[in-house]
Image (cartoon, rainbow, N blue to C red; front, side, top):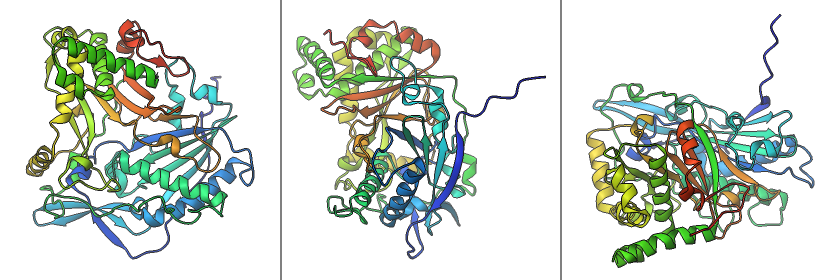
Length: 471
């Protein structure tokens, strides 16, 4: 008789819907930046905590109740998060809006039997696939927000911890607005445990409300020349991938930047040396080392792509509290693999990555919007070819400020969504001070080759080990 299948690593205990306070129904049209995300997966980011040790949070069920109550308050200001997408037909095509009718978000209470914090964040090892089970709506794409919640939270109880996984529709907003929302929710949650503190039942005096009016060059809603948007939606399964969490201390990033700066000064590029940033130096390191690990042919071309915030680059700039997508993926010019590796770390940082970032101006942003309107398209995994690298997320996102009332998170992790060979997501380091963590995704063979790259490992270290700074 065959053995019964093993039990699932995570079992769901309960699911509840959380709704905002009643308000007049409203529709908010999506912009070109938002619609371009409809074929991508939901954002999947989560925080790992040690369990609360003081009343009134005695159990994970108490934690779920606490999070649900404070989330309902947060949704008063961030009410589009509780809506659904709706497609409206026009004579020229169709448009997509957020139908803000208080449909609600979901909170899932789950248990990972026999799983501990050490199992979730093992030192000097790949991110366990177990982590993917901490995120519901695993394979949902943003277009599915027509019929499923735009935001789902899974609170997973571990033997000695709690993982709070956020699954959030990327067509609703970018990471800047997403983390602003999560931090607003956390601020309210903290206030509910200390009612005398400002923010117990509101966003608090320190936080400006989100700007919900969407930006477009002419202020008009986006009408797409399609009768049925579902024709644009792709559901692609990524190949087998490995994920590593890497740590870069503030000191190692300074050393990495200084190495690049000295190379530029030796080459006579004083302007490039003066404008150099730590981000450019890190992007150069990853681009060059991943290209080497792939064993690319000398004449094969490669590009470094970067997700960049448009808010401060527009003229006039968009406020930081703009709630929507305001990002583009920019890229360096294509380089032959041999040129990238031979010309060195400093040149790749300044001449390639630095120039691509500097060239992203108000004029360029508006030109890209105009070009997209002439020929609308949506992002999917096909957008990223096998020879590129991609720098996503941001160390500026305040992940570790998300204290829901029982302390700072132990670690941040993500699900399986929107990942491909060469993808790196940057997080702030838990110790602060300018440190960073990098979630690097590669195919098994490319990761194995990178693990033998001395230049790479002198700059970074596996999470849980001290960095080696040998420059």
